[in-house]
Image (cartoon, rainbow, N blue to C red; front, side, top):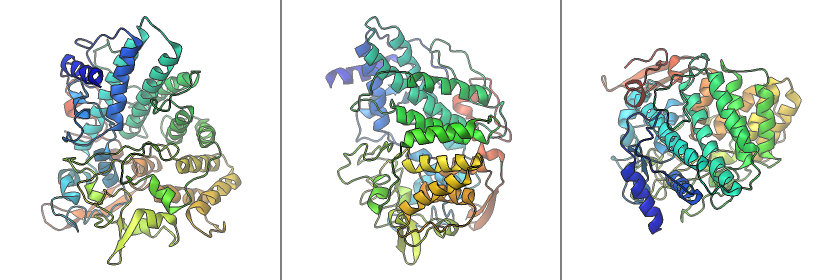
Length: 503
């Protein structure tokens, strides 16, 4: 432990404060000479990832020391990002997000009031800055790890592939998600910048999205060729089934975009099937809750296949998940349209909602007991997601019969006594099940809305009139591509802003 603490302090001291989070300067970076040194540096990164925290806090002292390039290493798509992206979706009743608080007036939606004022009209300047900055901070750190790993004098294939596999998969996954959030869906020319060379400190330009996918798919496929068996007690992302799951998600999103290619749906289907490997989806309330609830002892890290859960600790100053409330005092309501999609017997009704005074409230991501115990739950890869990707891909390839069979399998798992009597449009029903299943999780609904071109009109509080105002997001609206941040990117590198956005 002393050795780890020393390394943390060394990295904190030697890494200069840097405003350019896309291109980390190599100067003042710790030179690592042995495989063990590199492994310790990567272990610090994994520690920061598994102990993500939206605020600086005081409880997690060691995590607060994992700094690099002027920022703190943590999972970049934190609970703060999830709350903000959930507000962007069409699943939350925005009218009462701030004002309706059944527990304490200083918690709930109040802690997100500034974000609410932006996101109610889908102007996510603040949280786009947080995502961009966090991803490129992690990429800069991983670039450093991989460079040092390539120069060690004591090369060992097993250790090399476990370290490099972990770093390359995480880096590719973060950048794929960043491209999904920031690249316009209908403009192939405006992908994200990518720089894997820690010695190159020049500002990078935006790549075409086809180039982004080519680079990142190459990274993932290279790691698929590694022969070393992952170490469960150390590796998180280095796992072939996780790589397949990432590829399935990526090809599903890419297929309908300006970067789409003929074989995308076929690849999405194939990778989803490989990752799922015949495993069933959750079919009880208990299994459903396991994916989204923090257990009382907060000790289970991987309770379900592909569910990489991260738990925050008592003392989180931000109370990042407090908007969802607790099981006793839920805070936020779903829109009527969403709640009415569920059958009364659906196991997700009991797992996701509480009925208070005849109204449904979310409890899917509630805190433990009170708002001071704020969970951070990230089920990044789900068997349910893979099955529904496979079913959707079959529809797009003209195989409706097999898609219907998968849909029936899914619905039987979620609705007791379901007899497979669905007779409507299969694709429409698959997309409804995605919305019902992944509500509030990661950025799932927001990205589905983007790729499907969903139009939304909703009421939200108007700070000027103190009443309600109608806000509209059109299909294929420019606001579906988040703005390139001014503070951490545009003022340092000469790259194009997304169309429509102005600072």
